[in-house]
Length: 135
Image (cartoon, rainbow, N blue to C red; front, side, top):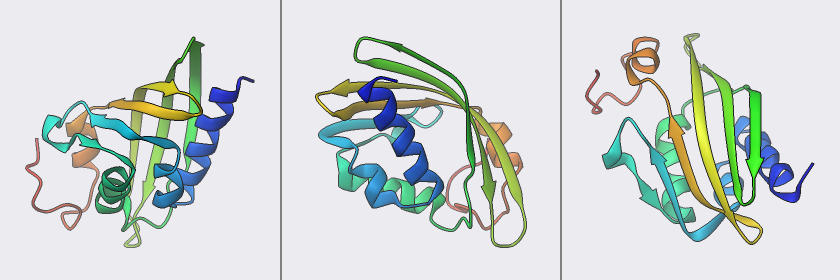
């Protein structure tokens, strides 16, 4: 396993633990984190990444993640994964995500997630991000 693959797998361990500060620490000061379905949700920098994760995932009890495919070339890793969002009220949402990660030095400089918004939102309780328009 390459150093970048090890770093990325640790990011997912930290994400599963819902430790958003640890996740953000894997990112460069100018790292861009983009959710492709919501361009307005793009953020830059570790603190903004931590805050974004806290806003979207902070109410979850658990977030088990399974990596199905991981392809690496140079400083780029592409990952296909499944996340299962466990809400404290018992609801669960299963989301397939494809992602691109670019590395600079020993940190992530780009994190771009591709996922289907209607699939995610249709499984979420109404209390989850009530101010975000539903597709």
